[in-house]
Structures are given as C-alpha cells and as structure tokens.
Amino acid sequence: MERTIRVTGKGILSVKPDTIRLRITQEGVRKEYAAAVKESADQKKDLNDALAELGFKKEDLKTLYFNVDSEYESYQDKNNAWKRRLKGYKFVHRMKLEFPADNALLGRLLYAIAHVPGEPEFSIEHTVADSEAVKNELLANAVADSKAKAAVLASAAGVSLGSIQLIDYSWGEVDFVSRPMDDMRLMSAMPMMEDCAAGSYEMDIEADDIDVTDTVTVVWEIEN
Image 1 (cartoon, helix red, strand yellow):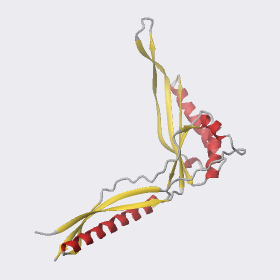
Image 2: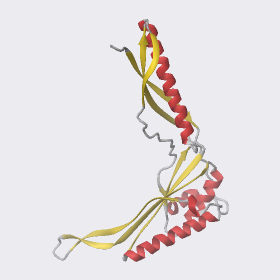
Image 3: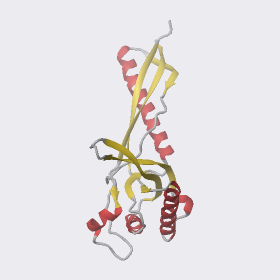
C-alpha cells in the first residue's frame, strides 16, 4: 500500500491597496416605462459628461447591473382593505469606476458626482490593480507553508518526503477589498463635506492594508 502524507498549507498576505473602486447607483421611479428608460439614459449621460471633464473615458464607467421593473405601493380602499396599485416603473443602474488611489482625484470625483442630477448613491472600495500577481504570491506562500509542515511531520516520524502525488486547490475567489466608508447618497453627504475647494472635496482617507488568506493541500509520497 502506497504511503502518503496530506498537509494543508495556509497562505497569509497583507497587501497595500493601490486602486480605488467607486461604486455608483442611479435609480428613480417614473409613471411610464418609456419615461423610466429615458430618465436612466439621461442620468447616465450627465454622469458620463461629469467624468469626462476629469479625464475619464466613457468606457471607464462599467455597468454592473441594469433593470427597469414595476413598482407597486400599498393603500387602503374605502372599506379599509389593503390593496396594491401600480406606482410606476423603477430603474436601477449600478456602475463602477476604478482609478489609481489618489485622494485629490477622489475629492474631485465626488464633488462632480454630487452635482449630477438624480442624487446617486455611492460606496468606496480600495483594492489592488494586479490581483493575479497577489493571488500567485498567496498560493506560493500556501504551498511553502504546506511543505514546511510536511517536513516537520516527516522528521518527527523518522521518514523522508518523496515526490508530490497531488496538489488540491479549490480555486475560490479571494476578495482583495477594503471598505473604509459605508454606502452614502452624495447630496445628503454634502453638509458633512463643507471643507472644499472649488470643484473638490477635501478627502483624507488612508485605506487599511488588505489581509487575505488561502489554503492549498499537498500530498507527498513517504519514503523510508
């Protein structure tokens, strides 16, 4: 019977974020379906125009989700019975914009978006531009940890490690994200951002390092 040892290694990495991801949501309700679609398109154009003044291209703003659906409201009829009626049509457009971490640029962006019609909601995430390189380093750390643990176990058992028989990795998604701010609506946030130069808010956000972990299981042959 073939003798093997199976050891799971854990990779741990602390990464300094270098990219800001701005998530923007525009939504509204209109009585007619066509009017909802048109309003969404108009708000998106206003947003694109505002971003273009800061040097962004139209394709830099990526759509994550778009939907137009019926919106209902509850009411009481003359017999005090609760019923539902069509309120209109609600559009939801969720987008993201990524750019190198820069608080000055972030301040100008938020100022510009705050003055776009529709009072868009937003959230700020810090991430890394080259996530694949970070994933590869994380996996290398996990394999090295597995090998170190296997060597200790083999030495304690008085045996030697042979060739690798199997490497098991789930290929799960690793979330390289730091979220320093909750979702906010820019227009309602403006009173909190009164210290601003013309066309910009003063932003002083120092994102925390992103701590990530992943595991790899390696099976070695055991030699005498």
